[in-house]
Length: 224
Image (cartoon, rainbow, N blue to C red; front, side, top):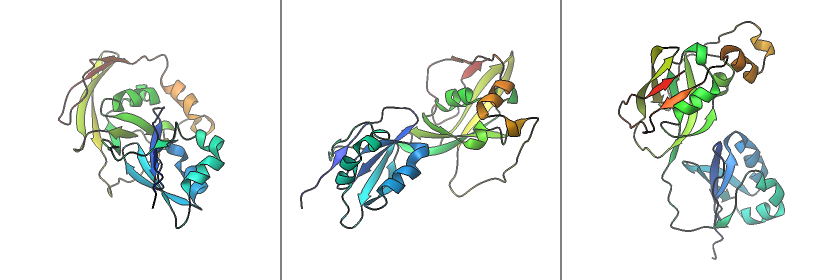
């Protein structure tokens, strides 16, 4: 039976890629994967493959190729390109959630979490509770990383001359802590960006050093 296989490449940071049988590899915004699943539900299923890749596997006699061709404009909103699949494609990354502890509330912002998490991988998504200030004991970020060992790193940030130690640790599947809600004045009436502006007023984050954090503890300095 002739195989119809395709591959595609990612073009944005906050995107994950997908791949399929009668197979296609494509790219899709992580938070919009449910839309993709609904779109392909009649002919295929979305299966995580690893890193920024996923599989679009056909169901029974479903044809992913025809679905993508029929709604090419719609799929263009998710995918960068679709190319013939190659057996040489290798998945060298994986997705994982990391938790960031020790972030001072004064500088709690998406920008800072992106800069910190970028030291251990490519930032894909920031947790809603982190963006909306629903809890301030830790932040959660979804990253794509080439590291196949458990991530557990320490770095330093400097805020107004004071040194803070920040720990980035990979979540262990199946383990969770009790959710704690933190409410403050006007929080129910402000967007996440407005909340961020209120907490972080003219605070600039400057990163010192360009070396990536290894799997072992490594200190890196940020200054604010």
